[in-house]
Image (tube, rainbow, N blue to C red; front, side):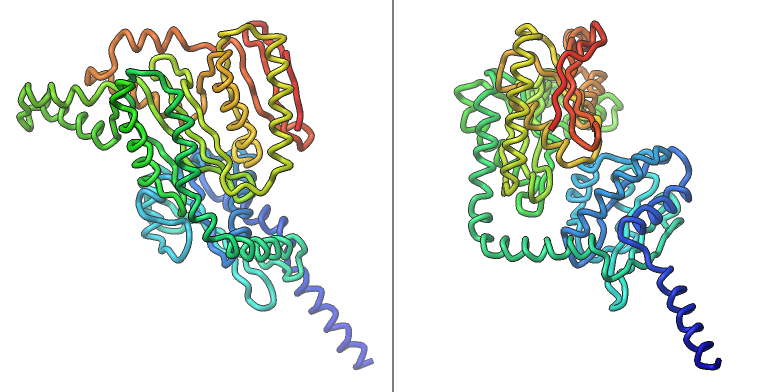
Length: 442
């Protein structure tokens, strides 16, 4: 009897201990949901990094948190590309130890109300998943979750094993990749610049970099290539720092705080008044990574030139599938849409990497096809264009430009990338008639 009671107590303790362990997916769901429930509805939230000893695992957790928080629908989740750009600009490399004060500083730069971050560590018996939210206004943690994950969870071990193989391959090819970075970047920039018409006044801003190709280095390369072609094309290059300096100089003169001579203002004025934006950078992950640039006409929102070059590409099957998808879309457009029609390409999926990849390749191919007028409605590009519109009060954007912007708005067709039965589906809508004219799935 005594022996039976001992065995029974061990079994009870065992069951009790086992129940405290979550599967990887359930831990992510429970942890993210707890954070979401403890934050005020509608606040701006940025997801900033996730610390672990494994890049593949960290990336997976970040993307899953994005998807889950967006799908909950109660919070305003800030765009990933903007989060990365600001973090890199302030010198935070999205890796390594960082204290809460640094996160608060980055949160202020982002304009976020809260920043969500965390870590996953192995304790020897289980994986410990910690997620927490920092109130940027108060400068302290206001919500947190800490859960144990079974050490034998198949999904987490698969992610760890995949990363081990990838690290070996990257280590073997490291010299080749490092040596080719600038070559690939140069191809992407050349493809973009060679298709920009003459006599544009170009502002370069919103460039997104990465650890292997920094934002400032990418921008320097674009300027370098533009300057080589400057004498032949009549291009004027306006960099963001010159733009900001000009705005401040104008405001100082108007306020009377600092005297700026007319001659000086005329000289500054010659460097301003952009009518084209170049934006873009490096996007994606290891399997679907690419360099994307866009040259956007401020007056019409039209994408004048686009360049999309695959970078460190391993997923050739997926690329081939996307190319075949575009051919079907192009054939459908040829049969249903007249030349010179105004088309907007939209990605409403959000943070799905494959959808972003499909979006970039479709948009790039359509722009280079030159049969249609492709305009931008992506949040990032619109932010840049709205920034130019806001400069109107300083006289840098003319009334004629504003009229052209408003007249050009209103595309005739919309290419929308959506999810359908866990697949990526591309639908082309006739906006005037309100019907779908082409539908393709990958």
